[in-house]
Amino acid sequence: MNKCNYFSVLSAVGVALVMAVAPVHAQQAKSVAVASTGNTEVFDFFAREAVKSSFRSEGIVKTSVLDTDETNQACSAADVAGKPLDKKRAKEIEAMNLKSVKWPADGKFVGDWKEGEALAQSGRGLTYSDDAKTPNGGNCYNCHQLDKKEISFGTIGPSLYNYGKLRGVTDVNSPASKAIIEYTWGKIWNSKAYNACSNMPRAGHMGIMTEAQIRHLVALLVDPKSAVNQ
Image (cartoon, rainbow, N blue to C red):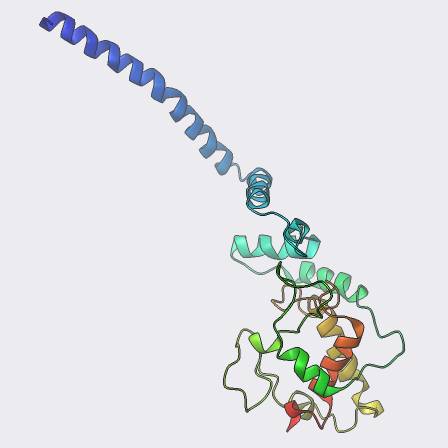
């Protein structure tokens, strides 16, 4: 190949490369333009689709667990933004969640603290390999200290050791204990009723715990005879 032909080929290859790269650069520029406009709805849509396409229903766990409600969406958006919800919005979310709290049908808030202790120390349930007939555990120990004898517990949440004792509960049937017992029930049923973006699962609201189970967990926390209050 003579020099003339050689340079002609190089020139042709160069033109081809420019033509091939140009659309890529144009697409990148378009993506940057979309990002610069703050079009979060577009990104949120594709993020949701990417997550959903990565999971499948298996056993008792369905892909519907990926669906989020207004509360979770607002709190997730605040996390992405790197700042907490503004106070007005937080109060709106708390009020909305408080309305969803289901109070005990028979008016009994306190059950058996020993049953509650077994629930609190159980992390079973809600995984694809679990039997739907197996009661879910509360998994409370994973985030809270409950008893001084525990050698392993989580610290995402505050210690619950002496929970009832520190709040002056000496008799669960006393009118003086009514407010804190009702608060404890509500907090377990739907934690976001009291803290909009709480990390604590909404045990009753999301169907993780039954009414009877929550009654036992309340007893674990407030009953003076409970291991928590010793």
